[in-house]
Every structure is written in structure tokens, then in C-alpha cells.
Image (cartoon, rainbow, N blue to C red; front, side, top):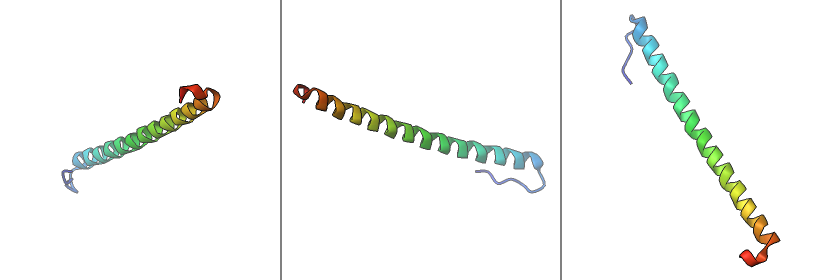
Length: 58
């Protein structure tokens, strides 16, 4: 990240926006990974339940 000059408020604001954007991107990636993991767990549970109800599908 570019270093902001202490006497240039525009550079300071731009650096703050860039850091905020980066943090938001990281948060969104983590949220997406959690959602994928939850969906995989639901699919696995559904598949297991399906095999329990209909053993001929195994």
C-alpha cells in the first residue's frame, strides 16, 4: 500500500479507504467460505438421511 504523507489529507483518506476495502474483501471471503462449508454439511447430512430412509440407493 502506498504510504500516505502526514500533511496530505487526501492521501490519508485514500489510504484509509483502501485499507477499509481490503478488510471488507477479507471479511466477504471468510463469509463465503463459511457459507460453502455450511452448505456442504447440509448436503452431507441430507445424503446420509436419504441413505437411511432408502438403503437401496447406497
